[in-house]
Length: 350
Image (cartoon, rainbow, N blue to C red; front, top):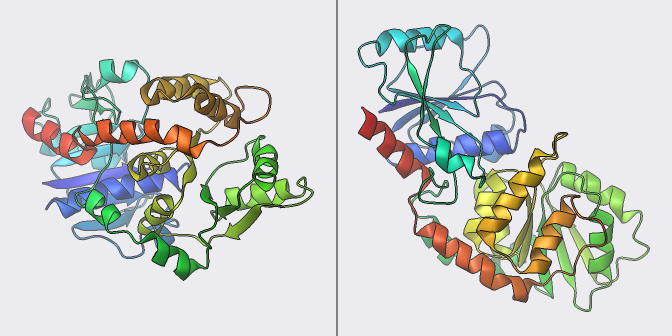
């Protein structure tokens, strides 16, 4: 089928990352995908190689839209261009209730996801009036749309050579390797102090952008780096970022795309959610912790990292947390991946 995926970029890492991985995954399975984005900047370093079956177009008020395809995916409720929606509705007027228009929602473990996944949403107004959208929720259970996991991922990970990777980047395999991709957590100075005072060395691999800026600011409050060695990373494409997660013993991740990649990496991690003024990130984290079922100190670590619990961060306990991370990865691998589930849903509803 010909898929049109629309994305408005709010967070250039997460939104772009999710939509590009979905487009590339569908393309690798023989689908044809047009990815329409209002900001293409991050793709220049995130996916410079492109992907078979995928073309990228800039979404502006003046875009000359081609005839619509078979499936319209609006990522995160972004409201695709009205002119394109009108043409899509004209093309599919004969089957308005078929699952041709998908609202791909944000990832969450909250209970409403299972209830809302796959539900129809009739369009009563605007250029798409008379059509039906369908909610499609990524998730962590068989009653959701699953997680993005391209064919061959586990094989690529199994062939990964950690020692060769570290040698190419000048990272000594001494002590523990920790990757850091975050916003500006208030617990960051405490983490750096903890690692600096740890009995074993830590190689901290800091991603470019906000994480690097926050770390440089936090290091001003650490009197000595002690056991901590900081490595500043350049911008990485998606494949390189996957390898970073595979190489590290513990991964700090943020948003949606990097969380999923940390789950597939199979090492313990800390998820930094974007803080919401209404506290919605707390409910989202708590629901995810119920899925993860971590040891109590890992749960406290994640809540403290997100500014939800007071007090110092519990010590990192990679060996003690590994079993929970491994078990969750195994459970998730047993479920259909998101692209498989999405394509199957569309075909079933035709």
